[in-house]
Amino acid sequence: MPPVHPIWIFGSEVVYFIAVAILCLGIYLRTKDIYALSRLKTIFHFRNIFLYFFLAYAFRFVYLFILLSSDLGFRSLMIFQIFGMLVVSYFSTMAILSVLMTVLVKRISTERKHVNILLHISSIVLLAVVFVTGSLYVLAIFHIAILAFAAITMILKRKGSHFSNQNRITYILLFIFWIINLFEFGRGNVQFITQLGVHAISVAIFLSIYLRLRKRLKNAEKKGKTRNNK
View (cartoon, rainbow, N blue to C red):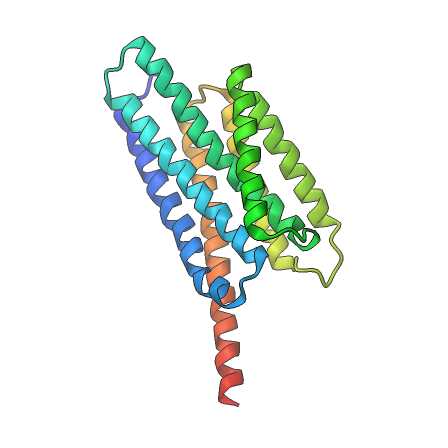
């Protein structure tokens, strides 16, 4: 298969980033009011999942843009690649840890700000390990372990917990999204058509979560208006 021109690669990344950015920010902003009213820790961490995903993809996009458009020397290129890898890894790890927190939040009595500090420290420590070992596979294994633990915990949740069937579907979609992206990462230099497929599935997953969330919020708003009119 002939090599793909860099402009097509960059163009696909632009479309991918715009789609992910709009959907992640849409989910984050649409849950702003309900969090302001309830102050629930579950919603706080749920919103952070998409905030950190947005930041991870924003830095990933900037990283690729500079990489494709700049004429960096070898040493500068290596330093830039390491820095870009660490920043993207940091925010993606925070997103994964936020997924875990939405599952475990009912079992944790520690104050939210202390939990948040712990999550940041955990991400920094993990990045230090990745930096020392020079391998992103350590990060991938950690992410898979966290997702597996969160998935098992969520499945074992009893009925009547804060995990409804709708919530389970949302997190299953997030698990599928991350596993697909880890598969792309594990393959290394994947073909352009495979990359487009991964991007399309990822956007479809975020779109599904956004549409389902919007529908639930609209239904909740209608119920609230009905109660107020009685």
